[in-house]
Length: 115
Length: 107
Image (cartoon, rainbow over all chains, first blue to last red; front, side, top):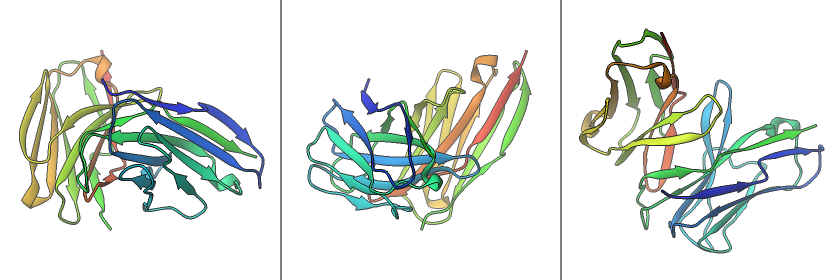
């Protein structure tokens, strides 16, 4: 079973502060993803990556940056957090290479509250 | 971009009844997956099914990729099947999710 670990699992931040959400996968998957989930919107794609050194914009990238320093790690960075970024964030990895989309495996989620 | 319509939005069953969940996509795709989200929030992959029919226990997924649709059939539902079922589809490593079907199975 693929293992995807997110940290922190819960975070309370202040408006204007910097937040980094981290994701680690131990299955050598090429593709990694960051989604947020809000009531009424389902899961929405923020950023994704094809491999170390690559980041791509998803459907709602504004206000977020991503970093993929290695095959195993993918971070989501909120430079100036706002209350509208209060949400549950999910990281996922996929076992397909190149531009394909293989089966996704999700982390447990990180609940972020911005006050 | 890709739009995903899931139906029904919610469903209430008596234990033992069957369910059919639908997913329709607005543009062409080459990847399609079904997930189960537990009431606590964690997501479990049910099927990676870009085409054809796949079975897993009481679950069956059927995808007709050229018609841009997929279905999930749950037979003989159990109370432990309660939760939210999500479909996702796309191409070029980018998956778009539907808003989900919330299933409640009563004993």
